[in-house]
Image (cartoon, rainbow, N blue to C red):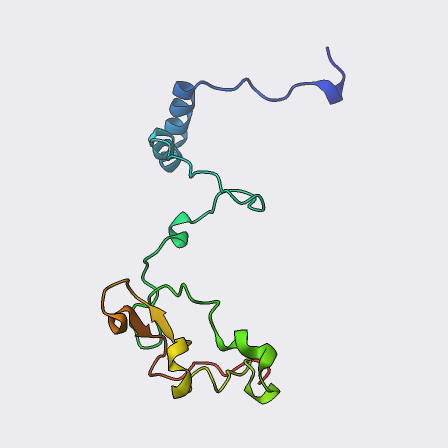
Length: 148
């Protein structure tokens, strides 16, 4: 009795049992299995106001992993990504600055070894030298620097 634009063309929502019967009749086994699985606990909301929602792959945001370098060795997570020779750029000569396409000569200089620009912190043991691991690889980079 309603005008065409106001008519309801969809059936009522099915109960869970009815939905399972319909999926079984249609042979949708994957959907039926997913429906019977327990719901996963949703991750805690982010404390950052700029995050739109939880991470789609939360396992990427924890320590550990299996990322390998060019030598095939598992790499440690670099918590010191911000500590590089680029921090010295303001007071350095342009030939000594670190750019995206060129590393600073100070980054791997023996006199600057104490800054540990080329090292990763592996653990917090008692021996200071056992806590660090070289970030370098014995194989050269696959691709050259961009813009260099």
